[in-house]
Length: 112
Length: 114
Image 1: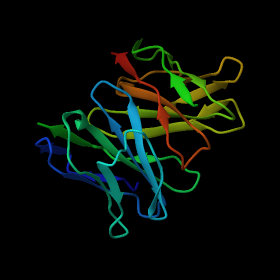
Image 2: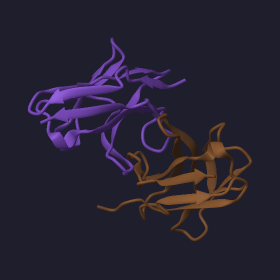
Image 3: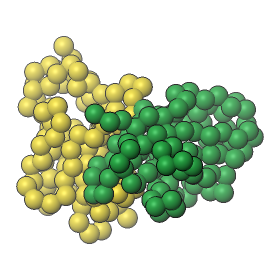
């Protein structure tokens, strides 16, 4: 069964540095999402993306965050200047029209 | 606003016994409800969804969920638990089904005791 893949599985970054999290969605899916899960807390929606633009974003998704689909296969989340509170598990998901979202295994981001 | 509540942080069930993981929802409009499961060091896996139709929804791995409109509940059930069912279970809701942001509950850790 096709899967959403995320790289790296674990990213350690100094506070203030830029980080890019990468995702390869399922190939025929049209809708893409990022969620995050701070340790011990709920999974929270960050942003959804369709037709090469953001469909919706949460309050968490401030100016430090951006998303891009640079080449038709990858879907990236960039955090421009990381803060300690950005430490979390970040999940990418994709879906086809009116179909359930499929999630990757996540990238654990640790900010030092 | 959409929300779900999972009142139990943890549920313990003996292997072979029936299991129930509870979820209640609050939505404006029609509910679109989901259950996802998360195994250690893995992403969330879709189990089942309720959009419309039968109140008993069947999903993956022998799980089912019962939609109860009067009680605003969507409890996850399985007739006979397996040790391999031990995982973190999330109830979730969104506004129109597939391609909309998902609002997750806080999760319930299910322990199946051998």
